[in-house]
Length: 311
Image 1 (cartoon, helix red, strand yellow):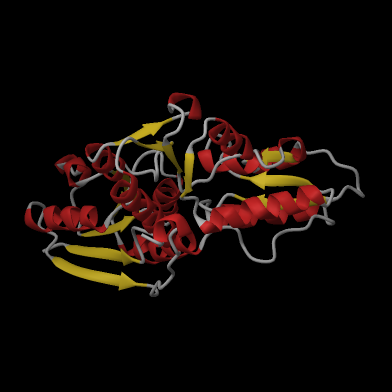
Image 2 (spheres, helix red, strand yellow):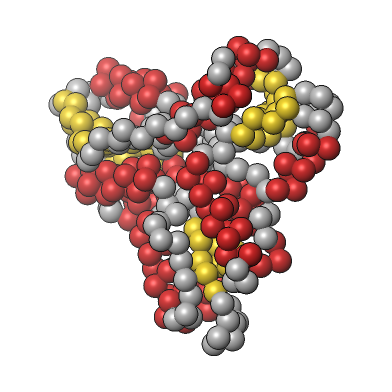
């Protein structure tokens, strides 16, 4: 009888829950066509479900006919995208996670006060592109320690750092320490930009992974926080797989002697996927001794935009 260890917290965070609720409420209030700029959250199951309800996902504002409704995804957008939407007379609903908005506000403040900003991020991630767009002439993107070694600033340069909200807590700590070593004058936000949900899910995985032979991380390939969970599980000594659903479980993943399996889910993965993966592991693969490791409770909620809350 194999053991199944399910990490908690896992799955939807408050920002993802709010973003999906905005789309679903907008469908009720405004109907279709309803356009969403980029994937509302990075999860295939969620996006496919909304497509089935008539939501149209686009990569650029240019794809949206004038005088329609657009929702900005949870990852945030650059001011230029907002301006383009306004020029087309689009009704704008902003589903940007409030914790991403916090980083945008910090970027604007530092830029206004004459700082050059080091943005710790994954360069091609949509969240990073949105933050960068707040002050592109005053922001340098940094992804690795090697990037930091290449930076050149005067000793008296006004510098500040910000981070993408879904980075590895451990890796980001190392990057910030090196920035401070190279540029002692650098300033940072009063509280971490890495969101509470990312931190909590990483801490929970760091607890279960050393006990597990395999950790399955439920999340889509383009989900930054899900990829970080997989990397963290591997760094703790477990074999780890990033899977979209229970259909991605295969017998060859279970090497002889696999007795303990862990499960977690990225912040954009719905709980139904966790339930389906757990059920298949129990019923088909024999991991019937189920235990939940609960690190802490999450009680964070974010309000809907006033345009929708009134309905």
